[in-house]
Image (cartoon, rainbow, N blue to C red):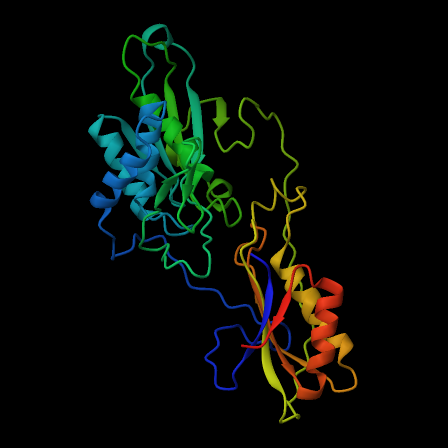
Length: 350
C-alpha cells in the first residue's frame, strides 16, 4: 500500500505516543507465567492441521501446527514450556529446567547410535510478535492462524508474524523423537531456550549444570539458509539514543491536525533482510514530516507526535506522524509532499 497523509478532525480520537523531553519509551511489564486466558486451542489446531495437510515431513509440520496454537511471546513462554514437558512425559523422557526457564529433554541413543556421544539439538521457543495495525490479535492469548499460499508452496500467517523463527527449529527437534525404528540416532539432548528475540537472554542465563548438559556437540536450528551450516557468528549490539525534544503550545487557531501514515510495507528481520533494500516505515514517515516542516517556514507547521516500529529486530512496517499545519500553509505542504515524495505519499483531506 502507498503511504498517505490525511487530515484529522480537531476532535478525532488518536492513539499515539506523545513526545516528551528525553524521548519517553513506554514498555509493558512482562512475566514468565503462562497467561490465564487461552483461546480455543483445540478448534484452532484442527484448522491448522487442515492447512498443513500433505506437507512433509508430516511429523515436523504436526509439531509446528501444535506450537502455533500456543501463544509464545518473549518472556511469556510458560504455556509452550508446559506443552514440551507434556511431550517429554508422554514419551517417558527425562526433562530438566533451569532458573531462566530453559528446558532440556534427553532421549537415549537408538540402533548403532546407542553408545555414541550425545548431540544437542537447540532452538528457542519464543517468537517475534508483530502484526498489522488492522489485525485484531493479542499475542498473549491468541494462537497464530496458519494460511497456505494458492500454489501450496508457502505457509504464512494471517496478518501477524508466523513464528517459524524458531518454531520450525523446535519442531524439527521434536520430530526426531517420533522417528520410527529401525533408525540410528545418538543420544539426544533437546535444548529449548527462552527469551531469545529480546536479546538472547535465555541462552545468556543458561545453567548447564542445573540442566545436566553432557553433550559436547551442539546443532543450533535457528538457521537462515536451507542447506547451509554456519560455523561462526559476528555477534550483535544494541544502542540507546536519547534526543532532546522541546515542546511548545500550538499558537495558530487555524491549524488542522494531519496524520502522515505509512503502512503495508514488507518489513522483515533486521538481520536477515537489512541489505534487501526494503523500505523502513519510520524513515519514510520521518522524511515526509520533515519535508512538510521545512516547506512551511512562513506559517510554521509543528510536529505533535511520532510513532513507529515495535521490535528492535524487525524492520518497521508501519509508522505515523501527527502534524499541526496552519490553513495558509496547507498548499505548501501539499506541494512539497507531491513534489518530493509524491510517488510514495499522498496528501488527502477527507
